[in-house]
Length: 160
Image (tube, rainbow, N blue to C red; front, side, top):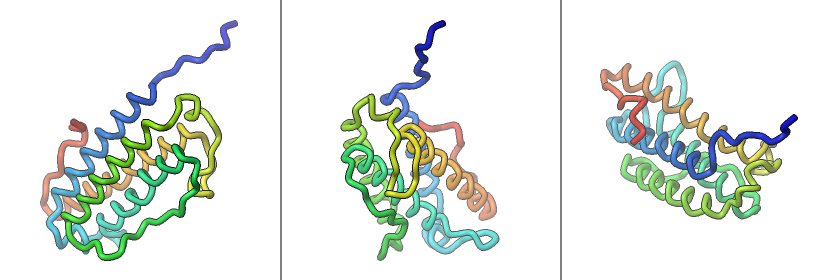
């Protein structure tokens, strides 16, 4: 019996996949009118800017923590961010942070058990999949917001 396991995706391809999602999320941020990005909500949910701040507080800081081993504090609120351009600048900076620290994660680290932000247990793989899944979830909420505003969102499959 062969006990070897096949790897379905490598770290390089997973980063490329995630960055495709991040590029699409950036286009969704751009699609919002400024006021609605920060104020519009449906059924008592947060504004999309609030959701984006959560994503900013999880993705890049989580990857930095995984790479360095330095446990960070989960921060999902950014004071003074009230313009779309500010949010986009933070998004772009976090993309670069992800790229920088991703390159510092050794391949064997992906299978290790970790606790992200000192709170969430899993493997490196499962933590990263959570970061990606959470982004997709909130982007889907933003699609509902955009459609309810009469704005056609970017195609969900266009992650170039």
